[in-house]
Length: 305
Image 1 (cartoon, one colour):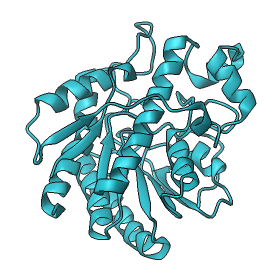
Image 2 (image 1 turned 135 degrees about the vertical axis):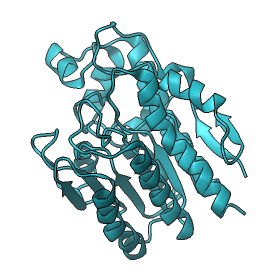
Image 3 (image 1 turned 45 degrees about the horizontal axis):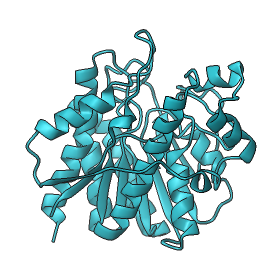
């Protein structure tokens, strides 16, 4: 059984050399995954840009018009973390299309990964924290609108709370948002997810995995989602520039393998995105993100038909 990974060269665009967002990580991640020997074969799929109709299910028309047409004011661009460009719009639509495709493949095969995605700070009417369109929310809303599913569980293990996702789905019965994050990190003003776990600064592997294991199986059993969207942010790593937790490389792998195995063992399709990760050493950062795909191949090899 092959592991499907969705990727597009357009996930990487040119940014100024001193820009804090590690844009090159997507290109390097693709290169590393192509060179690694995985537990299963890999099927690479190329996404199309997400349609405006799909984006409009979660974002306001005024915000989409401004973003798509380049009329975001300077304050809005500053909040996003990017200077607007046509290339940026195309990149964001491709990344969102990648998460949409990953979810669609997961529903058909049980498991799929995007090599980007996890833009959970984007709100209905505004960008925030390097997140311009909320790909997780767009994918969840699309699956519900198409009648593919009735219940979506978003498992967000990025070091930052998924505040945009939480606000977009507040009071929406078809989506359950679960965010496990550093309690004293960005954003300063937290939203209210359906389930928030705020972790203490400096938490290491064993304590982190114990907390995760105390919540995830019961949540899967109680909510019984038709699909899980998993945000596997690696900014929980002890060496991340923007994270306050202290997971190791092995801890990242164990976390991802645990989440994916829980879903597989419960016969729940799962689509995974890479989430946040901030390190000036792009090769090292890409290696952290690759743990997700390695864990996915290992879980698929153990649980595949």
